[in-house]
Each structure stands twice: as C-alpha cells, then as structure tokens.
Image (cartoon, rainbow, N blue to C red; front, side, top):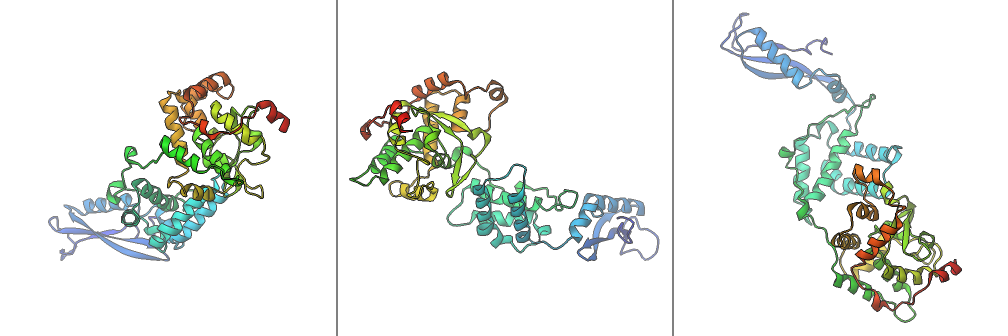
Length: 405
C-alpha cells in the first residue's frame, strides 16, 4: 500500500527559498488519501523541525497513527458508499438468518421500531463511514430532546443500535470495515442510575382492586378469565408471554406446580426467553385452589380466544388499562418483592423467576428441579402477598381433575 506514488507523503517548507532546510521555519507534510474511486491530497502542519529527517519522522508517525496506509482504511474508504439506512436493513436481515444465538421475534420487532422511528429519520442518509462520534452525539442530543421525554436507559438502548449497525459492516475476512473508538464523554452518553430507574410495581390494594374489578357479572364469564390471569401473574412471577402459553397439561394434578415450556408473542408460540426460563414454579395453596377450579374445565391454552388461540398481550394490556394504568411486568415485580420480603434464598429466587445470570456456585449445586420438598416449604412460607379468600370460588380436588382429564 505504501509503495503507491505519493502514499508515503513528503515534507516541505513554504518559507524556504532554496533547497536548504531552515531549522527555524515551519514545516508541513503532504500525502494522498484514498476516497472512493479517487485519491485526495492532504496537508498537515508539522511545526518547527530542526532537520528534514525529523519532519519526515513526524509525518510517518502521523500516517501510522491515523492508519492512512492500512489495508482496513483502504477497504473502508474505497468500498461502496453504503448509508446507515442500507446497512441497517442488512443488519436486521443478518439477525433474522443467524444460527448462533437466534433472536426472539419480539427483540427484532423492537429494534426495527427503534430504527424506523428514531434513527433512520435522523441519520438514515448518512454514509456509514461518516457515522462517528460526532454523528452519535447528534443522535443522542435529538433523543434527549424528544417528546415525550425518554429516560436515560431508553436513550442508551436506542443509541446502542447505532453502534451495532456500524459494527455489522464487515469485510470478506469478517473484520469491521469501520472500527470505532466511541468516546462516551464526548457524545454525552447518558449515565443510567439503577436506583432512579422507573420500575412500577403494584401495591396490595391496587392488585386487589384489579382482581375485584374483573369478577364475572351474571352469565358473562369472559371477565373471569382475566381475573385468573392477573392473579396467576401476581402469584407466580411469570412473564406475560409464559403465562399466555400455559396449557392445562402444564400443571401438576393438584396445581401446586406449573411447568414453563413455551412462550407466546403475538399469538405465536416460541421458546421461552432463555434456557433458565424453562423451569417449574411452585404455587401457594390458595392460588393452587383457585386454579384447580379453573383448569378442570379447560383444554388446550388456559387463556385463549373463542377460536382456541392464545390471547394477545396487547389485548390483555388493553383490558388491564380499563382498571389501572400499569404495565403487565408490574405483576412480576410484585411477586419479586413478596419473595424478597419472605427471605427466599437467592438460588431459589432466581430459579422461580427464570433469571439466567446465575453464578458458578448455583450451576454446581443445581438440582432445584428435583428438590420438591424445599421448594414447597419456601412456597408456603412466602405465600402470595395478597388474599384470595373473598373470591368465593368452589374448590376442586385433585381427584376430580384427574377424572376430567
């Protein structure tokens, strides 16, 4: 690369009237850089250099520091002029097709939405080679001034997509075409303080208000479905997709244990969030009693439409918002608070909640899927955190459930 004419550059002085080097005059370096199908000349100030050799050394150091003659720079500068929007489409397509650690449809949907709504309108027509710290700073500034106001965590999530798109442009050897050293201080990367993050949960009174509002009225039994669903979410800590994917066969005969085997997103079945999400969740007896009456008459999905398809999350959320403006994840946070207050051991807490960030000791210990006695004891000790006695549902014994099956 450096053997190309002019690529290594040369040094000169404007004030020199002869071929003699003036040790007191300012010196300059001149060289060629690759840009698309052409090369452009660049000139830099080297300052006062006592000899021509010193000036040449300074110029050589500049070329090496800026990687002017590197293979990677040549490939990125002379490659096709790809815009951020074009590379975004390639990135999403590669995620959909990848075999290693495939992404969930919900994750892909979220990233597409971030690109379409926030990033492409801002920098979609910018060449990928020009998406640098300055460009990222402008993105963060616009996100910070957006209405409604975005939280620091949300801005970090959105801005991270910019980094991933740039890093996804690779040469034939699998190396990044546009390696970046992102400067978080310069771009004013938001600092996420976990204590200040908005994590809405439910109080006991709010939960009971929700459950009481969905009591069946007269012959209308459809509301009962939502009341059981919300009670199960609060009493088990399941994710909404896991709960909507439950079938009658996923419960033990006494409904004290349920098995998480699948998840639902937009009425489509998929595997749960992670390997740790494949688990068994122990239920306190009051909730198990409530479920025995409900599961006994069900076939297929517990929470389904008239056609037998799983309910859609957005429809469940819409029903919830008629009573309380909270998210579905607030039920999961409620359960986590109940388990924490009860002093449930960390390994059992992570197992029931389906957390994947377990430490090495938890992996070595294992065996929680077989430790029914310990799980049952802690399940009863923790309880539900709310009362179900006023529901007045008829109890169904395990023997009746087996006959119905």
